[in-house]
Image (cartoon, rainbow, N blue to C red; front, side, top):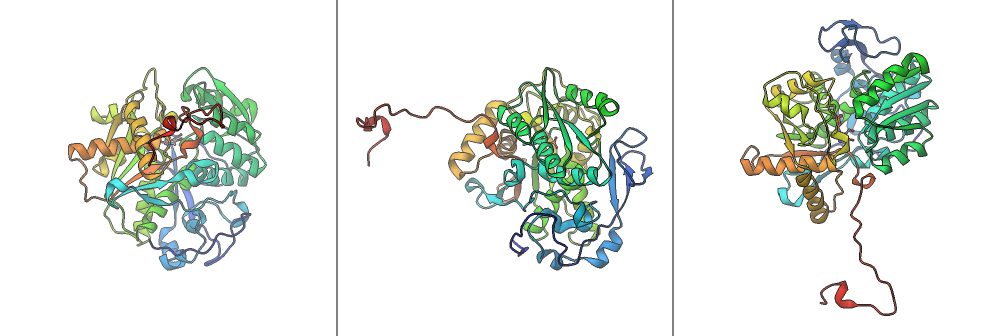
Length: 422
Ligand SMILES: Cc1ncc(COP(=O)(O)O)c(C=O)c1O
C-alpha cells in the first residue's frame, strides 16, 4: 500500500494543509448533449432533463498537484480536493470521511479484496456523496433537503443535514430495515415510510420541491453526489499503488458509484497518475430486482422498470434507473457485464465471508461476493486476477441472526449443549 498519510486530525473543516485548498472545478455539462451549464447556483438536471456532470480544469490541476503531495495529506476524501467541487475548506460539511481499508479475503490468496465502505460516517459509502452534495447545497443557499431512500442514503442525508444546519425530509419504502429508519430519526430528520418503491418516494420529493422548498438530493438528479463517490475510485487507485485492479464488482441500484469511479479513472489518467488500463466493471443485482441485468442481456441502452421488486438487499431494490444509459455504457466500455444472484446466494455469501474472514458485509456487498463466486466457477474471472468487491455499507444496520443459545440457570450449566469438549 502506498500513501503514507498523516495521522487523523480533529474534525471541523478540513485543514488547508500541503498545497493549500484549491478546487479546479470549472463548470457543469449535460451527460447527453454536452451542453455547458454554469455552476453558479443550485442545479438539478440539465435543460435536456439528464444528469449533469462536473468538469474540471485538469490541465491546470496537473501543474499544481502531484501524487507525492497527496501522500503527505490526511487520510480522508478531502485529500483529492483539487478534483472535488467544494470551493474552500470552510464550505465543507464533513464528519470525517476517512480512507476505507482494502481487506484481502482468505479464499482469494491475496488477490480478492473487499473495500469496506462500512467504516465511513453513518456506516456507508453514501457519506462520500452526501459530504460533497450537502457542502454544495449549503454553499448555494439550500435550507431544506429531501431524499427518496432505501435506507443508507437517508441515514447519510439526515446526518450531514444535521451537521450543515439544514432541515431534512426522508421518504423510504415500507420494507426499509428498522435500523435505517431509526438512524434517520435519530438525526432529527422528518421520516416517512411510503407504501411503494423508491421511485414512488422520488415522485413525492419532486412534488414537494416548490411547495415545501426542498432541494432534492435524489440519485443522479443533482451533480455533486457523484463527485464525492469518485473518491472511491481515487482511493482505490492510490491504495493499489496507482494500478487499477482487473475487475471491480459493485452492487448496482441507481449505479452512481459505477459512473463515478469510471469518471474518476478518466480524471486520474488526465492528471497523469494512471495509465489507460481499466478494470472490467461488473454490476451485481438481485434476481428479485434486476433491471440493469435485463437491459444488459437484451443489448439495450435503456432499462425498463422492474415490477414487484423484492430483495433482502434493500439498497439495490431500485426498479427504475435514471442513469441506466450511463451505467450500461460503463459496463460495455470496460468489457464488464451485469449479473443477478438470488437472495439465497446473497445470504450464503454474507454468512461465508463473516465466518471465514470476520468481515461484516451488508447484503448488497454480499451480492458482489456471490457474483464473484459464480463468475469464478464459469471461468469469467480467473484466480490470478486482482478483484475488488465493494462492501458499500456495514452489515450491522440490517437484520442479524438471532438464534443464540439460552442458559436459563447459570448455576446448572448443560456443557453438552454448549459444544464439544476439548
Ligand atoms: C449498501 C449499498 N450498496 C449499493 C447501493 C447501490 O448504490 P447505487 O444506487 O449508487 O447503485 C446502495 C444504495 O442504497 C447501498 O445502500
